[in-house]
Every structure is written in C-alpha cells, then in structure tokens.
Image 1: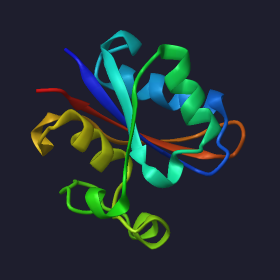
Image 2: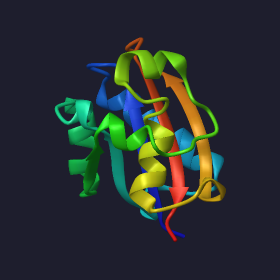
Image 3: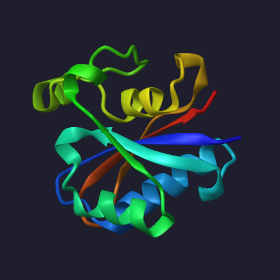
Image 4: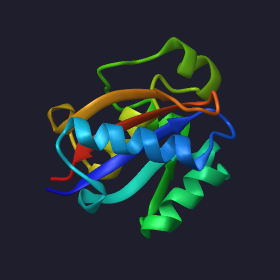
Length: 130
C-alpha cells in the first residue's frame, strides 16, 4: 500500500518532532516510511525548515496547497483554531486527502497529534493512494 502524508505543525517545530509524529502515525496503521510516496501541507508552511528537511531526507516530493483549496475538502476533525490561524478547518487531513486524490474512507490516520520535546506540536494524517 502507498500513502500520502499530510503534516501541520507549529512554526519552527524541530525535525525530531516531525519525525517522531510521522513514525507514531505510521505505526498506528501498521506502516513505515517505505509506504510513503510524498508529503503535503498548507502553502503557508512552504518555508518550514523541518518539513523541507524531512522531505529531503527521504527524497519525498512535497506538495503545498492554499487554504482556499484545503477548505473545500471534507474532513472528520475540523478545528476552529486552525480555521482562525490558517484560513481552513484542517491542514493535515485535508492535505493528505488532496495529495492522495482520496476520499474520507481512504484516511488511514485521521489526525495524529504529537507534542515534541521542543514543546512544538505536529499533526499527521495519512491517506491511502487510490
């Protein structure tokens, strides 16, 4: 099975925090990094150092979508906080679904939240690619 990973994170989250969040989310659905085809997030994160590093380490393509695009994708866990700050009810879930060209039934991990040792939060969603 191949999957797309949607990631949202606090500004300046560490690479370690993103790696841990990803590993734990993949474990939830019995997968590892070899199943990942690419990463996706909101375009406001296109300069997020740890996200860029994560994609580079694994040689994964990184897809960024504007809030207006992500806001049109139905998700199971919309957030008013994310809506307030990002202009869309979801980043990780919506980005994973969009990048995988998938539907809600293809969401293997909805919204895995993780707070790293750096005190920064990361959210990971995983969608099966059709």
